[in-house]
Image (tube, rainbow, N blue to C red; front, side, top):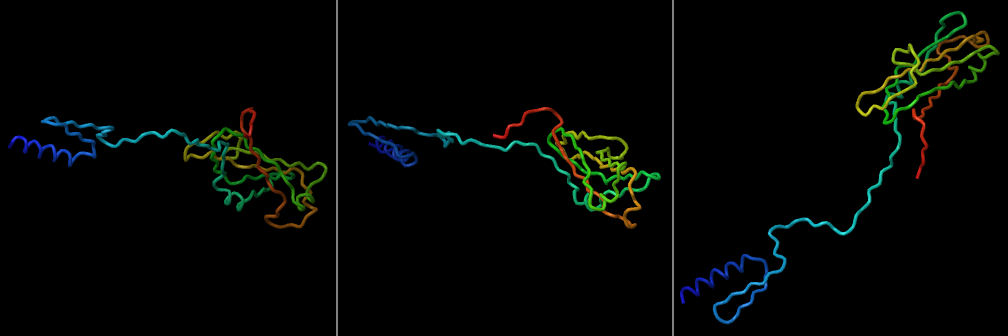
Length: 188
């Protein structure tokens, strides 16, 4: 009798500490335990659907010192009797694609007064020293920036047509950018 009581206490303590399980008792000394899905630990299970992830993939570039470049402007100075030249401060450029940077001149009303039949305006993207033309800007996928300056040249202006003064606003430089490879771009 003592054996049956001890066995019953052991079985009862096991049943109390186990998850709810179906237990069947048969006549006699036979104990049967029937369990379904007895997990040892909780494991994540994958659900039966997928959520798509979308991304706008595009070309990106920035000039991270635009305010300084605009505020300083480009002061062209007389280089010879009929030639005026000047450079911007260096632009700090970051981009995720190889690109070609270009520029053009847009004259103001005062700039129109300076222009005659033989007046010529030039604009180039140059290296950081403003010595050589360097329109190509290579992708910079790091904190390092590419540096470029804008060079402006004015030949044979009609300076006698305008009032004298310092820092007269005669033109604006307009920058343009394009990828430095030939490709077909499709916007979905």
